[in-house]
Image 1 (cartoon, rainbow, N blue to C red):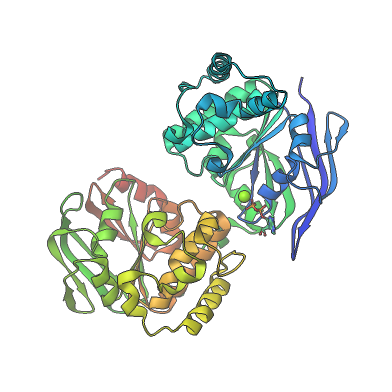
Image 2: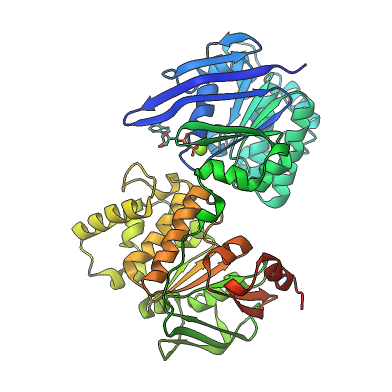
Length: 500
Ligand code: ADP
Ligand code: MG
């Protein structure tokens, strides 16, 4: 028997922000409901209301014809509503075992009543819960030894072991690999079979179309649409999210293409890349298309001096470069926004300001020495405004920003540097559609200002949408060069997969 959960007319304000404005949300048990929207749309806040994190919202919550008073996490749990937050680490105790973490609530309960848990029972019970979900994991392992995906499963197991009618998963797949995602989906489908209602927050459309029954779209703290998955399309969902048509996602091109800025002749690195010949002109955006593993990242790194070359030459503005390190590249006017931005592109533990003004970039400091403190602050403020970086302040640590906003910081950092050549490696990876649009506009603006842009991506729609000319890489070699307006996604895919 399925029962209906309804949130009606939910509004909530925080100092200075109306985070939710009369939002309606409804779903049934035994159903997987996607909740989607650009960063800041209010998804997490709505689900926090549902899971009892706030008591100052207005509106009503109903379940099965009964009015639920949810003003605390306990209220929510008593009603069978459980949430797994994105930050899994904060919800687990690392030096306790899997069993202890799954049954933590029970353990605490029992201790309160001065009953000692029998450890054997604990492990048995935890093992049963895991077996029930077909998760193979030793209950005796310490949580600190687990992978992120395993930790997430522990949290799901814990939630489900507490009589759960609705399970909220807030962006669960963002940090997972493909295999881990597949495993998570198996568990989610299993829960659906057991009549649990799952709320699945994600901004990966293919995932939503793979696993969900319905999708609820939010924008700017408001409800926009609710559709059955079979009755809608990704394009339509993106339209709801952005409030505009998909074609409008890419900026109108009016860049003027000038002389060749960067030329690469016969470039080979010591592994993947073989005998590449590419060039890019002032004001031009060239695409480097190719599947994962085709050599795009290696090429970007080679041009940035962080990958050793075996052969070939790189000529910038007529001068042959000897790039021994990224420091050389930056000095010569080449900037890279790397794929692994969390590892290489930004200092996540530092503030937005520090990142944007690059003051702490160690070796790079000299390049920016003309910037004084006050100017730095001003620059940071301006960039935050210009790039539409959603952050509480310039002092906020970058790790607390969403993926899209982290990426804007990674890009913004280089705008100060005024390089001649900008290399972007998968710049929209892990970025929601709203922020993607901002990033495209930024890149387009750089081209309009006469910069030479190299745009590496496995997203063919982006290559088509933003570039002027494309090189397709396959197995480290350039197998096709074509003007973007003379090709399409199908053709690029054909060459990307080794077609001739
Ligand atoms: P989403 O999960 O869709 O990315 P959120 O629900 O996290 O969006 O945020 C919605 C809006 O509410 C944002 O503008 C955010 O800054 C604001 N917000 C959320 N929680 C708080 C809070 N505790 N204090 C102030 N503002 C908040
Ligand atoms: Mg969120």
